[in-house]
Image (tube, rainbow, N blue to C red; front, side, top):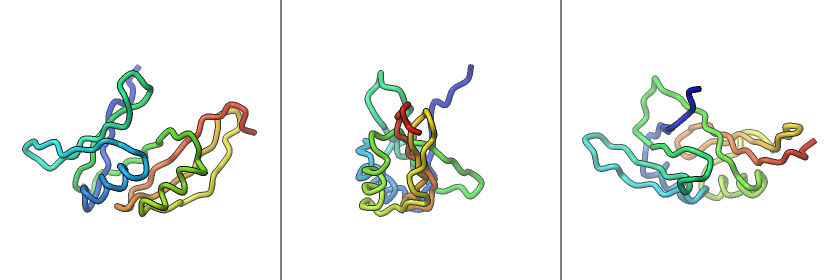
Length: 121
């Protein structure tokens, strides 16, 4: 079946957004250097579950909500705030799945963070 294989994050200032995701999540982000401004984001090592993507100049016709796997929603809510983002929701329990919260980056993009915990109740 078809799967998500790439994401694109819209940004008014892609370099600022790149610094936010580097700081909050440790992603490796580099300018592609191609014919259009486009910053490639490596979110983790090959062989681990997940996808890589990019940051690009904002296109008002495009929006995306990505969910990022984290080891602790509480810890990463603080990292998001320290990196200049904000929490839109408090930590929420998804019974039998884990915990999640919605946040906003420095560019006004909404994203989720999810902590896996099958014992969550």
